[in-house]
Length: 500
Ligand SMILES: [Zn+2]
Ligand SMILES: [Zn+2]
Image (cartoon, rainbow, N blue to C red; front, side):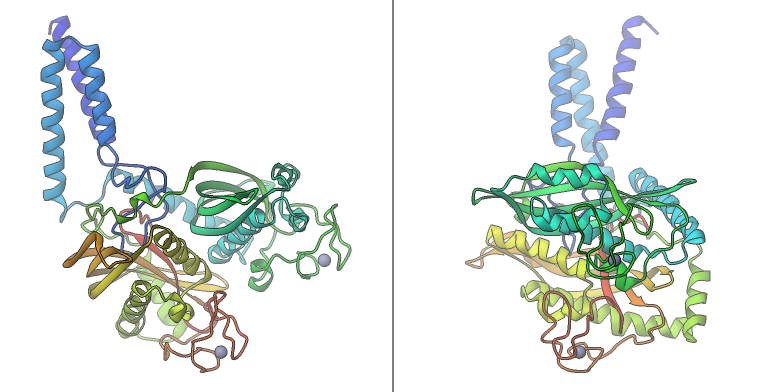
């Protein structure tokens, strides 16, 4: 091989690698709206698959840096390769098993799951559901109290430097309308003396400076720590921010002493606290991408099943004294299908309060995140003529306080965005679209109710028309959205991002 040929070979190899790296992955979003048609970060508009700009830059670079006898054939090869890869991707859509990105995430996720199992050996009270509720609650309070006097009530839950950061917000500034779009555990460290859990949160909020409002979209990573060997608080204490000693509602002096029991709460001794948080991305929120529909990406991907699923479902059947197959059929028909149709019907009518009893608090918030976004753009998203074609059982988890079941639902529906005048701005109101989503249902351990009359409160039987934003039945005063009486839908994950 001559030196010149070698150079070309090296360049080709580099280019080929770059193409492979660039083409399948865009910016990874934690969130994708229900129905899965599109995703957006707010800043960059559609951000559906990325890649285009990268290739453009590469071609520009090659044309400007290399002599024409090399650069022109190279550019032709790149474009041909790109077209070939796109075609192949399209024709593979039905059979593709999983992309390398998904496999890496599956591996990472299963290592997080095994770290959770490990954590449960010293803390049998640990519940992922509850922990994420606690983290959401801290996040929301942190921003809504920032710069205000109440912020000191977070003293037992924040590292000193985080506590002091409240001063960053001046008197004429405030943060409001905080909505969490999604939240997940991204890392767990079981160390000798400390347990650390990192949580990724995607959210929107409004920053008000001298009454000038700017809405932001953020992705943040929050690091929670706790001394090793501590037992998690019970659900009622963990969800609300209470004094970890006496359980009175969080009301602390500037020094972090509980106003009720007088105990000084040292961070990490009884409860999780925030060691630090990082802002991974922060952009001015824009609704530009909302009418944009990306090509459906994940429907053809192979289903990801939890490892050891058969044993876990056998345990589940034993625990509830049911025949798994008939239970599964009933759950598919009476719970999954019913929830799916009712929830998307309510979504399309912009009337989520009518299904408030079926949704967990976090999912309700996440729906509101999207509804809020559409409203700001003057749009409504409609999913109509929904037909479910298949339901697969993929995961069955249990901890001391909660059970969860995850299914993959395949469906077709009309999916489009219309503006106030009823004009279709994206998607189609004529051609049905196929998609699939992973739905996770949770229920308090020990509860046996599967289906009930969903138009009523599962506790008192009164009409479920007064659940309010908080999911509390006004007739009996009981919170329904925790899954204490029956299943609530807790998480929806798009097929292209689901990793177990
Ligand atoms: Zn106390
Ligand atoms: Zn009730």
